[in-house]
Amino acid sequence: MAFLSYLISGLGLGSVYAIIALGYSMVYGIAKMLNFAHGDIIMAGAFASFFAMTAAGMPLIAAAAIAMVLCTLLGVTIERLAYKPLRNASSLSVLITAIGVSYFLQNAAQLMFGSDTKIYPTVLNGSFSLFGGQLSVSYLSIVTILTCVVIMGALTLFINKTKTGKAMRACSEDKGAAVLMGINVNRIISITFAIGSGLAAVAAVLLCAAYPSVYPTLGSMPGIRAFTAAVFGGIGSIPGAFLGGLMLGVIETFAKAYISTQLSDAIVFAVLIIVLLIRPTGLLGKKVSVKV
Amino acid sequence: MLKVENLSVRYGMIEAIRNISFEVNDGEIVTLIGANGAGKTTTLQTISGLLKPASGAVYLDGQDITKIPPHKIVTMGLAQVPEGRRVFAQMSVLENLELGAYYRKDRNAIEADLKNVFELFPRLEERKNQLAGTLSGGEQQMLAMGRALMAKPKIMLMDEPSMGLSPLLVREIFRIIESINQQGTTVLLVEQNAKMALGIADRAYVLETGKITLEGTGAELAASEQVRKAYLGG
Ligand SMILES: Nc1ncnc2c1ncn2[C@@H]1O[C@H](COP(=O)(O)OP(=O)(O)O)[C@@H](O)[C@H]1O
Ligand SMILES: [Mg+2]
Image (tube, rainbow over all chains, first blue to last red; front, side):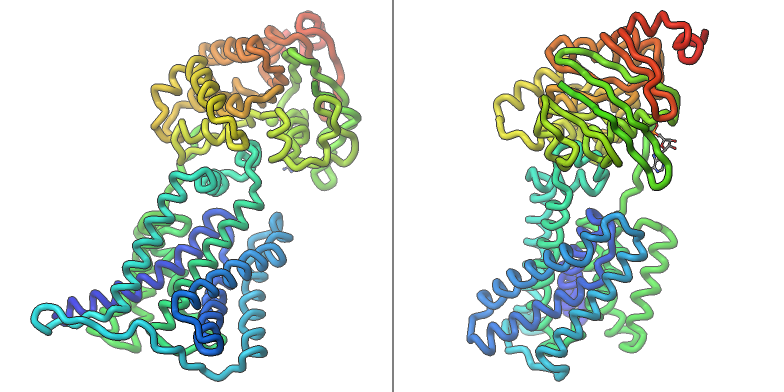
């Protein structure tokens, strides 16, 4: 029973990673850049929902909606101001800029909200028992997993079935050819940042519900783990981000439970390295075949 | 239809095309022939708006399109079949064709154009649910042409459609270019295969290291001593 309970909490944690990893992966797939500030969008979503609930007294769903709107605007604005001027610059310049944006957001949050840790309101607490009380499952884990599955399904439909989704896939393959189809590539990149940042806000609320402390560098660790998950699953691939996130959450939880809390990060990265040695493009990453 | 005036394009310090001028009239097939590196692709990319010229202008139906962004130029009736096909390999044949009609809203007309593309290229219909990356080179060329047709262009630019294809397929592609033209689409064709291109062209220009050195009707250039020596193997 302990195994099942760890599995469910691992899947819950992994769902949060997966939602964040989707943002990394979509932006990478389309803008071909690692948005290192993605974790700090989570932090912005955490503060936004925190103040919406504590200062404005809003219910959870409204606070989450506010956070989504704010994060979407923030993500699109960052792209417009910081990344768009670098569209033809080297990837190193873009990476350094993204790291700069990350520090900027952390320092801006520290300036505005102070560096002390704020306690997130208790949301979605409680649990139910199964197997005659032997297994206790928290509502939060179930809500988190379901949210992730719904997001994943909606995103897959969007990418595969809608006109904008198809334009996104075209841009991720060949921007020059996409432009020749009449696709406004800048608009598609904006939409991608909007979706990724909106998802980061959802992740922020779920994350803070599980670990109720809000502080300016809160996005760093989940950001790095989710980035790892995205690489693990195959960066650029949506199902890859989903699978990578879930597996990372489960591996991390099992490592903490059965091996050692201190070593859990080392174990997670060891698994990542082994996977990349065997499959350099990640679990579901595509090998692009070029025909002449 | 299309007029290029004193166009110069540079890549950093390299001037890839120098002060070239030519035009394509309604209903014509015009070809631009030249060796590898002459500046043919540069010329087409500049017309489509993917490259911005150092000087000169491009006019489409009398309107200066030099400063218009490339995704808008498509909506004005100018489509390009790029060098090396550049189909979306991870998308199906049908999705590639749908993307060709990306800017259009006239659903019924798009349906009709799709039928027409499948009539021109029956192989594409047979393979419409296959990923474009799994097609042969000739089929990918057909897909790239069909995709451009789905934009319902007034003028279609084609960059070396015969590249890497067997002589049999090259003949088929050129026959299709002629029938696209007969259906009312003006064609600007860039080729290294001068013999085939001059055979179907109303008029032709020779591009040599970034400059236009000769012009005339397709038949005139095919008969010209200079062209025969340089491009038709004596
Ligand atoms: N992206 C680029 N950067 C620098 N030089 C280029 C680039 N593309 C083409 N060139 C140069 O411009 C000239 C014309 O190239 P191109 O237009 O591709 O010729 P063609 O299509 O006739 O083979 C060549 O000398 C080529 O080396
Ligand atoms: Mg070329």
